[in-house]
Image 1: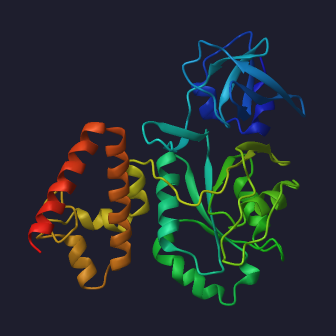
Image 2: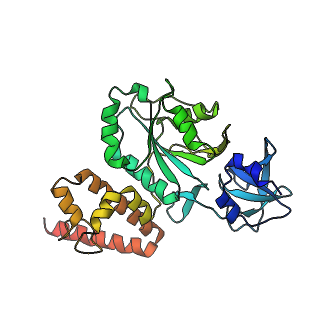
Image 3: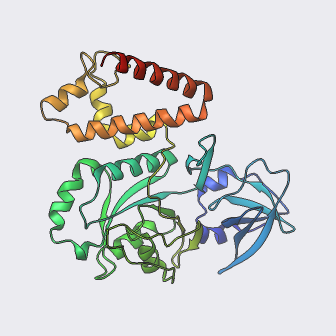
Length: 340
């Protein structure tokens, strides 16, 4: 059995100690990357990390993903430890959940400081991060390209209250030592659109030669990361590099939304009705806050958009609910046509 102290360099925590079921004859390893029915795993031997390719046992209840702790016996994963945290989204078909990564401590919400960041995008990524069980940190990249950084910080302030924010630049090294200290000995991953600078951050922190690509003329980033992979960091801990996601399909619960929109959650306690939808409802404290300027209309619109998307995802997983919704849409369309 692997010595637990050797595993700290791979992100092992006391919480993992509590959750892992004892396998006296197996080797504890961490999943680096999955290829169909087999995976690359990394284990520790003294100061060395050993990588090997292993198969999946047919008796596994859980399909391993990058970041999982597993028990390996005779070249086969025989057990997957319970996950402390997991980041997931609906799969393209919408009928089940796709787990992207497991056992993450910190999620870097990476956005470029130039052009001016999208507040809605930051909020959506926060929802996904909080819902995973990990702690989000907002990382502003390409600060050297920004003509007025104070303006950007003021711009993101409404969506970053209570959220640690780190300003970085790969060009002049700004913020990199702070970020280095923040991710040390932790399992970290990054969320952000293509071109936000995630791979460049990984290169700077880890010294990798992962490919990067320039931003296109239309301002959109190019996808350079094509698979999920775990990178051991030289000082301890690991970074899980995730492909850029152009449009996040949310997979979240109300807890993640409440953490992201704490201001709206607090206001909602003062609504007349406990199930208030904050859409032109009598006695709505949230709507009143928008009316008197305490809450921006954009903030409420973003909250409503997230709620609608999550509702849509729920209906996609429930055919009966989706059929009922389509029936209501058809009826509404017919009534609209008759009224013309």
